[in-house]
Image 1: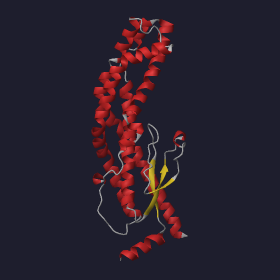
Image 2: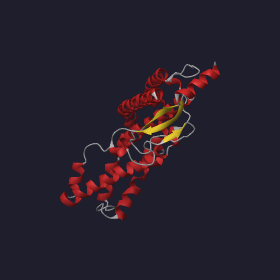
Image 3: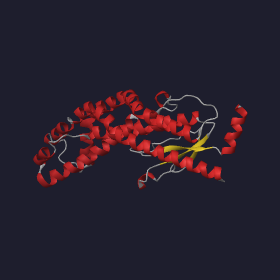
Image 4: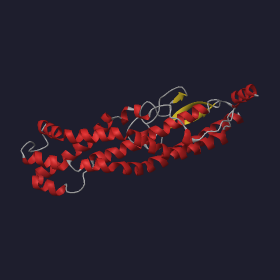
Length: 275
């Protein structure tokens, strides 16, 4: 009973540490997004020009009719394609930089696991050298279509705000009100980069847990205390190490996987076999 209780406490300590590393990475990923947003933000700046030209030419007298919204979307298609292509080209760059953010946090988890549940066979390991066994970009949230969907959602909010100005103050007021920077794709990029860092973090954690397979029996999908995170089919679900089911399940996810340990008796038997 004492051994089982201590095992549970060890799992809780490691879970708390995993959530802490996810929080650190969630905050630091904003720095990564800022590094990469420059060119996409420059493309964003072209959006108002296209919208104003559509209004002045009569292509869109308002944005409350589906046909006129569709016409503006078509006019913006070249910009959206360039943004999407740039995002696609960024994939390797995001992965490489994110690995540098993730590696120190993985090292902390490796040290903690070694302290909590020493492996049967000690093998040197470093978070900086962890090979990702799952491609984080295989997550559909991170592909170009996922990025485009985020940009579209922000653009729709832009059109709704633009329509209010047209209805209440006229189209001339629209230009003055939107003189500041437009950041549809840049804001979407920040959300996606944070999600990509989470995907890389969890893929690296799974690789580590598998290396600890003589003492780690599986993993649990856990999350922060935010209520919106505690929904869906994954929260608090336990998976075997062979499963490739990992966070994130949505953009901006704060979920992470935490290891579950074999009972002490099982580990003792394995140690006896190795000896």
